Amino acid sequence: MNGPHDLGGQMGLGPVAPEIDEPVFHADWEKRALGLTLASGALGAWNIDESRHARENRHPVDYLSSSYYEIWIKGLERLLKRHGFVSERDLAEGRAVDAAASPKRVLKAEDVPAVLARGGPCDRPVETPRFKAGDLVVTKNFSPSGHTRLPRYARAKQGVVETVHEGFVFPDSNAHGEGEQPQRVYTVVFTGKEIWGEDADPTLTVSIDAWGSYLEPA
Amino acid sequence: MAARVRALETILTQKGLVDAAAIDVIVDTYEHKIGPRNGARVVAKAWSDPAYADWLRKDATAAIASLGFTGRQGEHMQAAFNTPDTHNLVVCTLCSCYPWAVLGLPPVWYKAPPYRSRAVIDPRGVLAEFGLTLAAETKIRVWDSTAELRYLVVPERPAGTEGWSEEKLAGLVTRDSMIGTGLALAPEAA
Image (cartoon, rainbow over all chains, first blue to last red; front, top):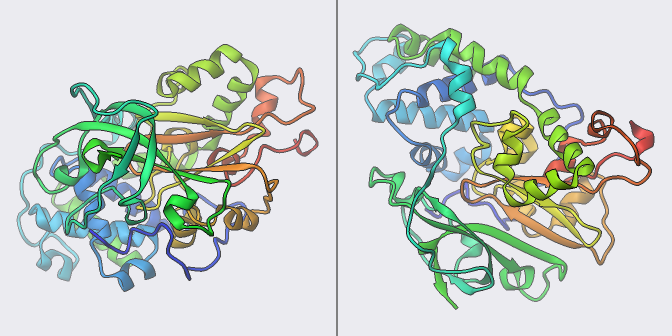
């Protein structure tokens, strides 16, 4: 979706303001927000692509004025409601009122180290790549209403394939319950001028990691 | 927000969907066990051991796993080596993708709109806000983490560190130098 999360190249958002000696968390609720998000993900009802879409699919004013952990919590509430774990009544009363759907599993404290150390690899075997390193390619121009990982600034641009990666789960389908449909991923490099025009920094190149169906031969 | 998160935790624990002790372990892991010291060990080893650097270049996931750093948001790693000609900078314009296994959780600025919007169009302006000014002719390569590959920048080894142990070298490797918003520290800063 052409949503508020797709920020590359937007202007007027202010300075970066790095914080000296920044703590890992800025409030106790942020710790619980991280833990709740990971522990709820372990219920097995949604995947990382659906959760990313639940976070990004917000009104721009809401998205841009929320801290990142606020966005996570708003996205998590949406996922928990969609999958029948939490109801509006539960949230209104701040306690469990309605019965919950049955989860595939519940993450126990003793299993956390192993689960985090294992992670969630999303590479999948797929057939021969369509492109090879050095190929000239053009990214597609599209504006899907659902989830995609092709940023707006990199659509309809010509670049060069630098690296051919293995197959990966395709987020545009996986986020919407349409299966993993894995495809090869390619690191594609663009000049600054191709993306931003004549006034771009001449020393700049930008790469994205693009699923094969985002690309056409140039 | 604190009340809203507390209420959600109450609901989920009452329903038996979340184990509060599991949250404690997750928080402890990312607050105390996984952080940029992991990545600094990878970089220091790459500086010290050409065979390891070569492995890191070709198969970063395996080379990093050999030091014990694996798992969530580090499943598919790639290393980007700075050279005298080229400086690498990593961003996730679409969300907050970051190599947790080697750097821990991302800082707030990495997840916030100013960095995500500007890193791809005005990297020199962004670097200046970190106090880093590159030579005008230095090439800048920005890596937008749009898929599941996670990038670790390997900064250049500072001059004057010949003969240093890996442990001492690791002390020069800052988090920002592994994102690309900084360089490794000079030896006198160690």
